[in-house]
Length: 477
Image 1 (cartoon, rainbow, N blue to C red):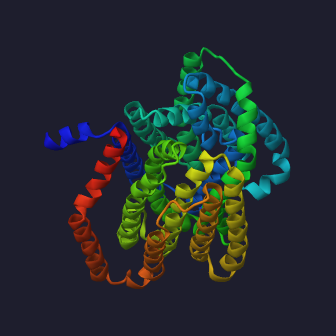
Image 2 (image 1 turned 90 degrees about the vertical axis):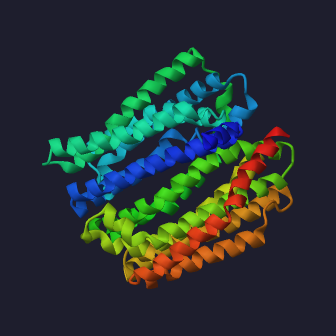
Image 3 (image 1 turned 180 degrees about the vertical axis):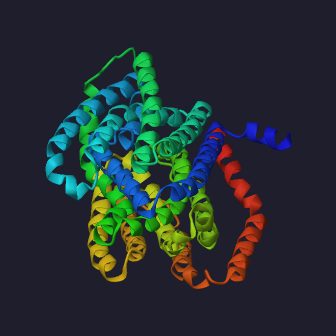
């Protein structure tokens, strides 16, 4: 009861952060639960095929939906506080128009690129349907998060994260002769049903009002960002496609399992960042930069701790998530997780750049690092196998974070964060990621490291809790 009362006294922004983090943990927990089921219901080659589908779904989705629920939407929440429902529905219709154009081109070109895509025509049609309705849910969720209305958002997120894999598993069992179709169609059709509900909700709340004056600003803002968003995703996921092309679907499956493990910490940071965005925007609006660093650096330190814990527990996590056939995936986890740590640094710099509406600088960073990643992958995957993809990625994420940092300096005209501290923290994570493979055969050494981390966290618990107190004080002020 004491803890419950203290939680109730926290400011809305902090409670929202905790709630979104909880939803992320639940979603990642469900991912942990269903991944072992998928790896046992599907052959490695089939699991690799589903990973290829999910990768293309994300890549085409960036172009088909134009990422209108990202940075430009948060700006719309700031610029039109009294017309947020109208703005959301207007963005939805704009997204649908772009989707129809993209889908028509993709379906016409399919005969020419089918062999390159490695996807059946039915999967392409399914993608196009998803692209039409998914933005409705994205806009609703982004608006709820910006307004810190976390209760319903968390409930819907958790329910969707349960419904989709559950439906997929039922479809696989019901149609064992075509498990890949059962896995993909089962999961996506369940989500489509959820998306349709929110499409109707947005239409009703906005009374179907469409203001096309919002479109020009949104298109001008996002057009230079599409290469950036595409580059960001390719930087993290083109590895799977290149492994599939250069090595094979089985190796793609091994790498995908490792990537799924690392994706858990990405989801956690996504929940943190969703609450950091409005906080950062409000401080930038007042040109009060010091509190941004004071709040962000402890969160980055906590995230680094989670990354190290995951690296140390990689053998146990993979043993739970997959069969013995996938155990070699543990050696891909450290570099992938290390890369994720540099990836989140992009967010703390880009949040500031987005506020000042200078997206071209972010695009330069992501495009440069992605092209570099593809080139390095082509060279080293062919020579050293799929594990090389993890090490090329960690280097390219470092390049991206470095460029984004200088972009922030250029836009703001000053340094916001304690870069010496971030540099030391980054070096520690990288060294652990590079050399942890050497101790995977010595469980006692890993457990000692884990014990030390736990003890340090306990000793520093007051400082960790103090982070929330700091945010609470700033909220009142």
